[in-house]
Length: 385
Ligand SMILES: *Cc1c(COP(=O)(O)O)cnc(C)c1O
Image (cartoon, rainbow, N blue to C red; front, side):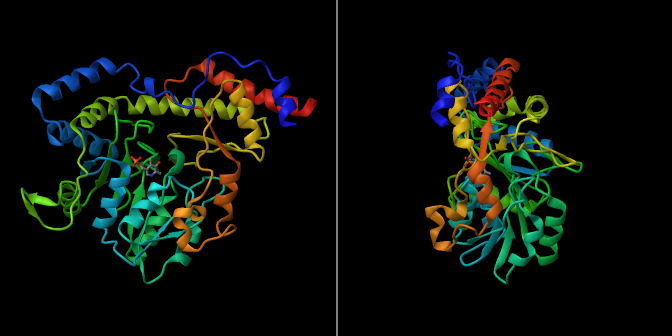
């Protein structure tokens, strides 16, 4: 069936619809960005300094928090947030197995144990009703993930965290500007962690991340920790890190931040187009939860024949992604946790059937139309074969 489908498919078009187009992620801002980089070269403020501080202030405003501390990656942001929550060796941290691996790396970096909770099958985020049964005397923190840009159901989660005296640390690496109620994600917990990896909704010209918080003491400690734990030069109060943000990334991010709202609107419009144009197909489409604003970092659909569908799309010159094919509890790196298949059935089902369609602000309507057409063709041929 796979072979025949390929054989009768339309001849592949010459131009590729890429899954993401990072050459276009600066979307008309390149000249302004290059000028800023020249300014950095002139000023020689290469690491941290005024360009980073300027971005930190703007991003704190955007999220609606007192402090933003820029670091060199989203992974470092999570690591430092866990240290500041007092998570240490032997502690347990509740999180999800369906996420990018970095969420659990950070828990491992402080020698704590990730304790997984399955996801909700319609939102793909932490199933908040399963959290309380996982809390033990060793639990120190909860790290939910606003996966694909969809806010987790954070109000009940915050209530649970507060009632049990646990730190709530949001992994908002995929959800810049997403809102729950009338509040922006990242601002609910003790701290919120962001990544500015180039492919994220707000992307740098390289690696960068940030922690946001309303807690003055945590912000001070984060600023010291990222810079070798020096409050005062050459005085090191605890184990520190070189997790500083580059000035170039600060400058790029400050310029691009001004367009984040527009880019989010463009992503939302494209997600609505997919929803409208694909809903008659036998695909499991993602939904936005009422009262929340999804920022569509990824448009993830589900079908049991995803390998065949993705191969067919590839032949039509359409690239797809998979986020994520193996949940963390089944990864070799976490084998010592002793999990087996069947432990988190919803995450496993999504991992088996998920694939991601191209969706990014620079994508054109005709590119999106090609994705829709190809999917229609796949299912039409299946019926008439
Ligand atoms: C990208 C990502 C991270 C890590 O960010 P980096 O900047 O790549 O280190 C963490 N969590 C999630 C959910 C992510 O998508």
